[in-house]
Length: 131
Length: 216
Image 1 (cartoon, one colour):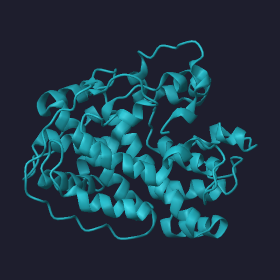
Image 2 (cartoon, helix red, strand yellow; image 1 turned 135 degrees about the horizontal axis):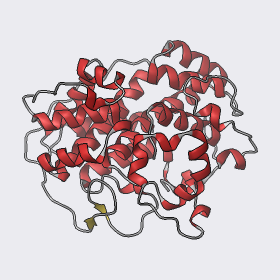
Image 3 (cartoon, helix red, strand yellow; image 1 turned 90 degrees about the vertical axis):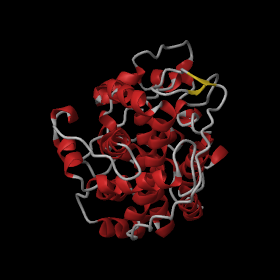
Image 4 (tube, one colour; image 1 turned 180 degrees about the horizontal axis):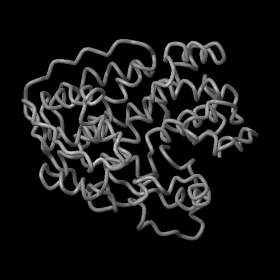
């Protein structure tokens, strides 16, 4: 959604391929993915990954990336720990992508088994979250 | 903004909470850190199913065994939690205590993960403040389809009300998320003016959720 608003063609499959740290259609994408992977799975040196990221987007950008990685580590635990359902609008809008990308195989998918689609719900989309 | 929010959270976490004492909240933080190297957690993560691994987490001085189990599973393998597992622990702990355990686990994970990402040492655990927890169940909560009661009625997103059963913890949690990511009304701007563009921020978010196998 934000990629469309910014005129980008993002390879969502590559984003969700946990091993991929190459180009995905977002500026500084390889450095951002490498940094996230370094922090989360330790497959590379965190200091080196952050330094490379900062060289591309600056120290403030690297700090913001660290903050978002941290925030989403909390968000996934709250979402999965409380068993919330996927919101109707996102459920509808993401149906095709979830199936194509294998996200429906995640254990948490069971929490949204009772979500029903309402007409027009897909228009709401991800942008309604957190606001 | 990020560092100020973190500092405020650290200073608050030792206070008595909604249903946990200050000592118990700090004990949660200790268990979250233990989960990084805990052998049982490591074995469960490596298994096809976490239930295939024998073993239990013992009670600590401040937390009963069921509470320790909740913290370790949420901290180390949240993507494979199930309703059956949650129901069992909610029945044992009460849904308010269960919810606060999840919330405090998430909050301290945010703090520790940020420090890890920035190459900084872990913050020292704050000293617990004596006193009883509030133990007040808020009005207007009920079954909204999640594992625990939450604010009923219209909501912008389920994730924004997920900890509404424990208002004090929820406020701390929402402040952290807002400062680290969403920034209030700015979130609706798909081309915001920040050090990371919106697509870059969403890229980092998407990869982080993927690595944690989170459906939501």
